[in-house]
Length: 401
Image 1 (tube, helix red, strand yellow):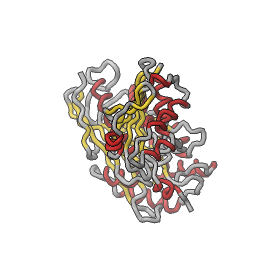
Image 2 (cartoon, helix red, strand yellow):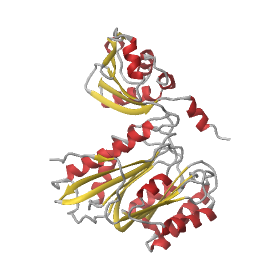
Image 3 (cartoon, one colour):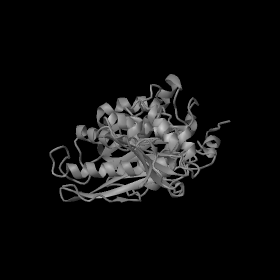
Image 4 (tube, helix red, strand yellow):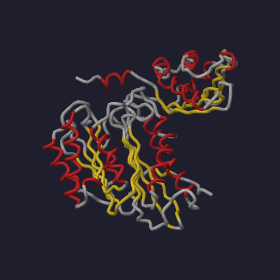
């Protein structure tokens, strides 16, 4: 049976990993803007990437590298997306892995690369190359927090977490860091997430576990309905804990998957709550749909509606906008069967106002975090999306000179 999973709000690198984050001059603010994650042992690697048809050079390169199944390092820069830069972008991404590999003494094909920032701007390779040397020199077993800071762009909060568990009676650590605040919409978004573990895990099983975890976490976050060119989640497992390789059938496989799911969900919810300009974290749950797909369609329609998201900025519970959005969602909806709750209070019953005093509903919507549950009463399909409100600050952040 899976152990009780507790996610710790800290970052503790698993055995055999080092990290660093440094300011190299990509950001005018002078903040950290390059990170490096290194496994001292060859690590099995799994990855999931953006579904956008326009993809950054880093996504293209990493998708190819993933076929090799082994990773030793991930070099990450913020401040420049290296997207829509043509063949030169691919050359620059490859050069980043080549130089990192040379400094670490590992093959470049085992070095992955990620970028985040402005699209269509040439990579300042002189700064990048000097910065790789700087960040490599700063590698340390306790460098995780600096790395998690260096991958941030418009994020206002660092996003990291750790899970400790037992596998084959051995202590195992699973740690993650992520960034993402805007251009966030499921499958995936302008988000980077890096998950590291010292457990030994079968490569094929690792990919399946990551895909399942992402579907229940990163792919259920929506800030603004946009889908990025750079989304990447990588999971490295280096086996330093000394357990027998995990895969389905292993007594502790369920425990590992539960820990991975909990870690990914923790990071995903942090991204939703730190949406650009956001003041409220909103969980949208849909029950009673004809299918899970219908539930997902309805939940996404609510989460991506600007009319809904702007109404959440204030306190007035404009449930009519919720009804409107599920109605056009392409999910099967029978108006007279719909029920809507704000946390535990009914706002809509049988498609009309439930009669709950508005001040009680307003009190809930005034909270920094609340849940909207929509029951379509048509079947057993369920779905959930983690989202946020949309304020004037979102426009200010995204007005680029």
